[in-house]
Amino acid sequence: MLATQNPIEQEGTYPLPEAQLDRFFFKILVGYPTLDELREIVNRTTGAETPQAESVADKETLLKMQRLVREVPIARPVQDFALKLIVATHPGSEYAPPEVNKYVRYGSSPRGAQTLILASKVYGLLDGRYNVAREDVERALKPALRHRVLLNFEAEADGITPDQLLETVLTHVKRTETEPIRV
Image (cartoon, rainbow, N blue to C red; front, top):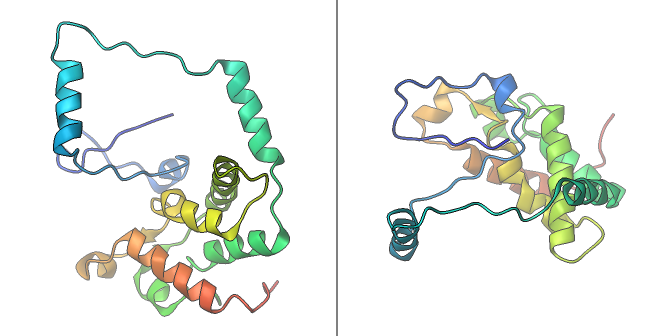
């Protein structure tokens, strides 16, 4: 499923509840198009020809790709790194930096952990590797979690964004990563 969100016009729309937001794999931030991109948009959509969508993969190919992603191995230390990032988004967690305790209302869900791992596997494959590297986890962190870490009013008042907070979490976990996961 793909959905768009207009940051300017909210009339006639309703914010999704947290449980529904959690079902989206990624939240990708798309900025305003450049002049060249805007020209291409206008050229494709205002001419005599109607743009046509073309299929790039059939159902069976997509299912094979899904299976391949799930088969990509992830080493225990890399998995632990990803899981520490998830746990560190929770206020009161032993892995949480002070900023999480101050600004986060709710941390990432288990679905966020699943998404972070699966997206990291995809990034590994896209880089030509059949394994997950820490860099893949770092690359997947913001799009996988920015809509799953819910900030409080104080964060909004201080101008803190989910991406800024996730960067703080990443820095904190990397600095303290020599500590094993506590059960």
